[in-house]
Length: 450
Ligand code: PFF
Ligand code: NA
Image (cartoon, rainbow, N blue to C red; front, side, top):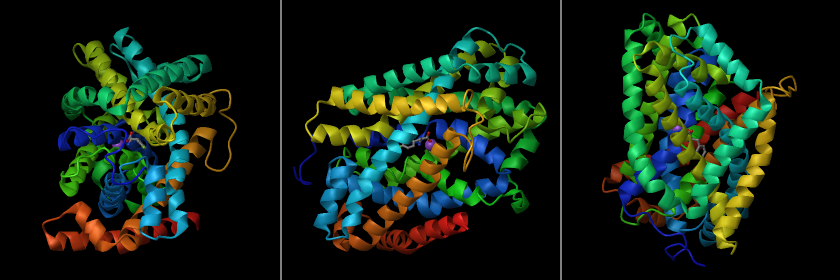
């Protein structure tokens, strides 16, 4: 197998297909579930500003580097990194980068699937009309009841994992293209409808100010680490997902505009989600720092108040579930693609990867009930898995990618891949990748540890 081949996995039809797939990976629970809840826990505006800065200084430059590596290697991240490390005569440690990503992928998929299971439950709850005219108390009680039921959570987790495996087993491209092409615009329209509702609530300005006014005193010592980690999580960076998708990207497509498009779409969806959720929080005297349940306790109130709310709510949670689905597929792809290159049939590889992630996911299921009191380091097992992957493994992977492409890859190889017409832009990007991104990430790390 050589880096010159077109890959045994095939190539996306065109640049737009890559954009759709990469956006499908990026836009998911991270935007609609996680961004609002960590923003609430970290005090609002100052955190949002740090997050946006991280997207700009680290997220976009690293994403270009990661997609570039994938497209050049045309193999799974593990094989691409093993191959490129030799090819560029870089220190052997970089060959391990794909492995770290695969491990991170197992952990992320394990809890991602559990949370995605909650959205499946909410499709049913919405359709049953449970939230018509719902108050904050009703919404909170309903969510608590769901979390208290480990068997229910396990069933939903299982269902979502099976859905994910079914698409991966067929090959990413076939399952994904049509789905994402329909889903992304639909999700966007639904978000705008909800945004319209949020605008009419009395708490809108308070929600807006919470998101966009800078108050550094509300930050805590973890905030900057969480903001950085989230910029990687939300863009699916630092663990090989984007590298795997980049491997299927047509050679001619422009890297820069493609990556910037994906990052802008992802950021827009997150900010709109925040502008929906926080006005509802303040209008109903709810707690912005409610944690992982935030989205599930606020949105039902909005739907309960809207005409035909049960119907709109059902459609909305279907869309969130699909967004989570298209992300979950990309989380598993690096490990599956590696196994396929090793000669394991795609179906069996998928089964093994999903089974392992499913087993680890049981710990997250139990973190919200039976094992709710088992706390160490950052909290429950779920909290720790989340912190370890988003806030440690993904940023570390990001530094390694930036350093590899910035320092160890021959300049002409890099330039040959990005093909930027504007030489100054190329220099600015490469400078950021060499100095600013790694130093910023390392600085935040050291600060976070201290
Ligand atoms: N970017 C996804 C989200 O925001 O929901 C999460 C994710 C997908 C993380 C793929 C990692 C990954 F490889
Ligand atoms: Na995202």
